[in-house]
Length: 303
Image 1: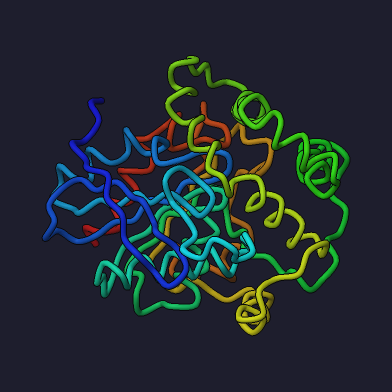
Image 2: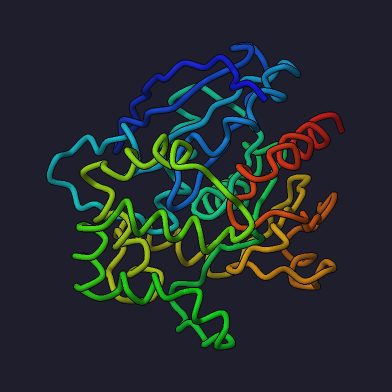
């Protein structure tokens, strides 16, 4: 599918200059698409066109630490706890004057979408969450997972060491490419595809943002004082009351979805419309099966 005609713009919040791409009708109902780690706005190149064609305003921001997005304060600590990326989404919407929006995302972006929908239900009309409910209780020690799951999380333990920080700084492009290959084992992406996104990892804040994110969630780095109460709210697993569709890549080694909806999912998604495990997709589902994402959003917005 041809890429939607889009333009790269920037909007200022209290913390960031957020770069984003926009396509579609500027007066249409807004949809915000949120990428994960390690990725950028190119993840939604084939998701955006059907949404724009349907008359929606499609907004795809670069998260903090990625691409042209920059911290406004040159000496501010480069932090990226979950509450911060959730607030970035609300700040982005505020800066653009969006009173309400639909959101979709995966990985970090799925967490940001879930946080915004849970804590600001009046702002979010619909959600497509890829990879499940990943809002974290950062105050409780994480319990060990089965060994085969722990093996897939090696990068998180690596980033919690100084060797990992140095390794990410020295090998960011090759390390991130390895994660693409292992997290979506059936996806045969080209070097050209990867090289369109890899420059986003050259952002001067990328390493510090990534390291803080993975250390904070494991109790090995302090968060921002302004988010302490927000993190307390998130630790209670707030519900997402907007109509929602959950998507999972059947071959995603990080999510490892069950075949059917779980009681835990029902508990946090009381307005769950559908839950779909998408064959032939791994972790990078918007790239691998973009039509699954765009059709889910259009389904929710037609309700």
